[in-house]
Amino acid sequence: MSDERHNNMGPVRPADEEAKAVFHEVKEQVIDKLHELNHLDNVHGLHEVDDLKRIERYVLVEYATEEVAYGINYFGKIHLGEEKYIHVRCHKSHDGKVDFYSIKTDGTAIWSREEPLTYFID
Image (tube, rainbow, N blue to C red; front, side, top):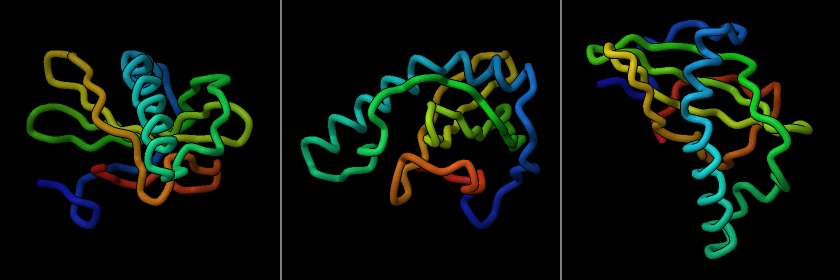
């Protein structure tokens, strides 16, 4: 099993049409998760998504992949507007089914453009 230190994540690349299609398939689940994180922030005072006032866009800017026995893990940096980015992980199985996995929330859920896209489990 992969972890943050031992994984087969490939190089980060600019978004292409195939990767955009993968992340578009999970857009609704990603937005739902952001709303859930916002609710938890308000309830528990975590402040992970305080900087995100609203979602103005949903644009994949770069991504990386990791081949695994059961398909491909995708890691993507998605621009939400202003200078707000999230790191999203999803999985595409060999039969083409795409599933949302997680949003990186290690310390925060909102990242800068400069923050490198790295392997995460969250």
